[in-house]
Image (cartoon, rainbow, N blue to C red; front, side):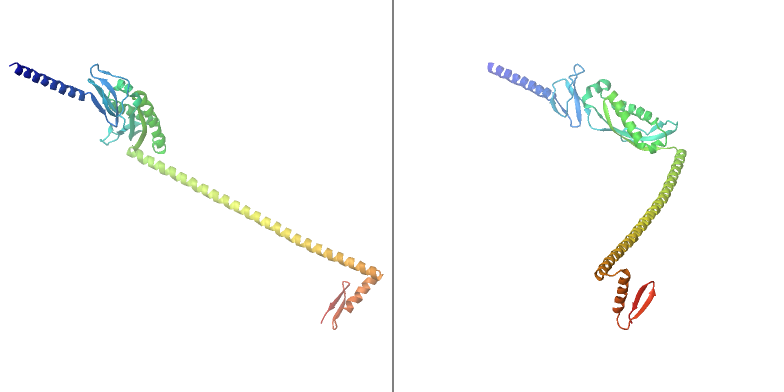
Length: 315
């Protein structure tokens, strides 16, 4: 009887241990939590309803203990789109009032991402319901930026408008909701039909004016080119004339110099001959005259009286 009682007690004790072990395993499994690769998190104490610490937890599996859980925030880029597409966070196309009083309809989209270093501040300001606040605030910012421009600038200064929107969205949303805005896209600008026609006519008129100015500049450049070519040709002609003149003068100087050398040589020869024959100039000329006649070939005709010179023509 005692043995049976002890067996019953042991069986009951083992049963209790199994129940306790099962409960412990069950509770232990709830002491872990996982943060996905696209999220970061802060640790919340569900008992005290407070944030457990100042740590921002990255992706991974953590043992956090009982009564605690992660509040997760996405760190991927989130798109906000203001257009008539219904598949994105945002709203319908924006009606904006421009600086000149004209109303436009624009489609704008942008990306934002939470600042991981300020997750606790974001949670203290908005909790986890920050997306609708960001959408509402961004609508206000975009409309205010658009009001600084006029209609035509949405076509001629589109990049400047996009830059202004991106700057203000990034500055104001980070200051208030601790998110970054790295990119903005002005996807479409819709004009009232009457204004669109007037704007197209103005653009065409401006283009025609620019075309006329370009054509006039081309004509002026062509005229200037012709003047430059004429001046260049005149310079070339002058250079050639100077070169020809210099060449002629050079040839004449050379011929004169050669003649002078010949005359000087003849003078030296005559002086030497006169000295050798012991004659004067008149006697020397008579000698040369006689010498020239004696050297004429037989049958030659001799002409005299041509400027004091003697001409011998051979026949």
